[in-house]
Amino acid sequence: MPSAIISDIHANLEALNVVLADIDARGIEEIFCLGDIVGYGPDPARCLDIVMERCKWALMGNHDFAVLYEPTGFNASAEAGAYWTRAQLEEEAESEPLRRRWQFLGKLRIRERHNGALWVHASPRRPINEYIFPDDVITSPSKITQIFERIERCCFVGHTHVTGVFTDEPDFYPPSDLDGVYKINPHEKCIINPGSVGQPRDRDPRASYAILDGERVEFVRLAYDVQAVVDKIKAIPELSDFLGQRLLEGR
Ligand code: ZN
Image (cartoon, rainbow, N blue to C red; front, top):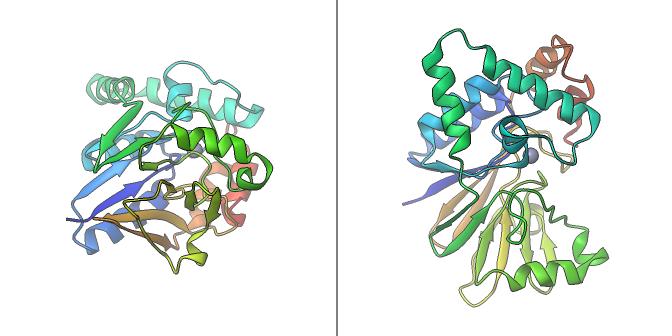
């Protein structure tokens, strides 16, 4: 039975709705979320409610952590966004949804084992905060080698918002090099990033997610109403206009 892997929604309701509609149209029932449900975007409460309802489980991302505890290593606009998000989630008039959302955030998992793979938001050695960048295979191959030493076979990560597959050569393959599909080789290690639903950073503004079916991983990109989100961000003084601009450019 296929399942969907979504990550880095970042309170982007328009992108999340388009991704879920695609998942539903394919008849996929099981959804896993790799974290960063909130932060940057204008609809944290709605996105949390949807993930709570639709996902089998969700992992703790650094932005979820920031809202729950404190922002660590954030730039000024990310930090302001985290505090605004926290205020939104504290402002709820009704106590029941408020309680449910905070309880859900507090119970997000740090790592998960499923389908013979490790699942984390960021990296196997620092599951909430370490970035595994495509450039690292050239500039820091030893970093990638050390990260691969910590996994037995396959690992799913989000965090960088860059869709693709790392192998332990080390090398990185964007979906365009794979015709959109990666077959997990049981004798090789790999780190797979489904990309970001709500803030892609690989110069393709379309929402990104992946479908896992046995050993087959298919990467999916979907256009959505980016301008609607840009306008919402513009209307919220605490969210920097740059957070909207970057959605238009996919960076
Ligand atoms: Zn993120």
